[in-house]
Amino acid sequence: MNRLAYMPAQTLGTALQAGTDDGVMFLAGGTTVVDLLREGVFTPKALVGIESLPLRDIRVDGEWTTIGAMVSNSDVAWNPAIKAMFPVVSQAILAGASGQIRNMASTGGNLLQRTRCPYYRDLTSSCNKRSPGTGCAAIEGFNRGNAILGTSEKCIATHASDFAVSLVALDARVAVSGPGGDRDLAITDLHRMPGDTPERESNLKPGELIVAVKLPHAALTRRSLYLKVRDRHSYEFALASAAVAAEMRDGVYGEVRIALGGVGTVPWRARSAEGLLKGKAPGELVHQAAADEALRDAKPRRHNAFKVPLAKSTIVAALNQLAGVT
Ligand code: SF4
Image 1 (cartoon, rainbow, N blue to C red):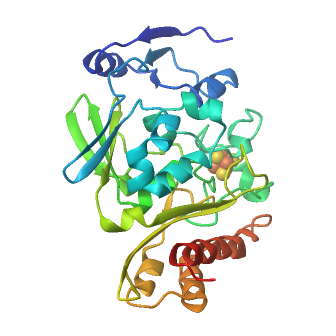
Image 2 (image 1 turned 90 degrees about the horizontal axis):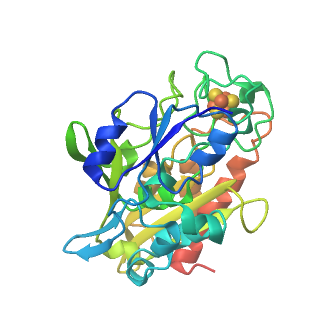
């Protein structure tokens, strides 16, 4: 067993100061980090506990709803304002994990959870994400759960978060604090596709901490939903999922948002498919065309080719449900 220090932080300043040391990791709800410590994937010299930081508010004001990074997933999902204004967010969270895990998992931690690629957690396997330069066991191995969009020759791991998919559909922003000060970035700029450096999963700088997620207010967010397909109905990751939101004008689509989970190396925004729907009346054929467009660049592997038609069907079903097409 590795020995490591634990340093609980009571203020953001203390946490950020402690987080600048090499070999230090932040610990929030612990639902990813503790597993990976036990399995020997993470070997930090110290953990900075951030669970007591005063980042537990959900605030609705002006043009934004702001969710503190330490608000639990359960508290976000069941918040009346979130349910009414952003149903896709509540549905996405409730479609993930279990009640017990949602009670512990934090808003910031959910976005930074690690892939469930089994080779990542198996220290005897080649894995460029865990040990850069060792290869990718999934490419020639069992890759049923792996990604078909945004992959590289170095890594085909799927991003695991349902919550992040809903945020991508809503054009959310992420507020961060770090040694260089405060900044915020678009949710689509938080996660990195693997490219040649799959070990770098986010665009956070060393020592930076997510302090809040910001949801912009817009008419279309109230007409939104999350549809997830998985091997069993609870406590399972997505094989394919779709977060959709739309504004209707005189019976045709105005602005439309489509984001996908379970198929991309990052929470996947299907912008070209969205553009195809604008100005069209909802219907099975037009939804099918948007789904075909969303998966046009898919690169399936030996065991996950089924995800292409599955993701298309998921998009069509989500859009049909959103628009009341029967
Ligand atoms: Fe590792 Fe990524 Fe390959 Fe999985 S897909 S084995 S996480 S490099």
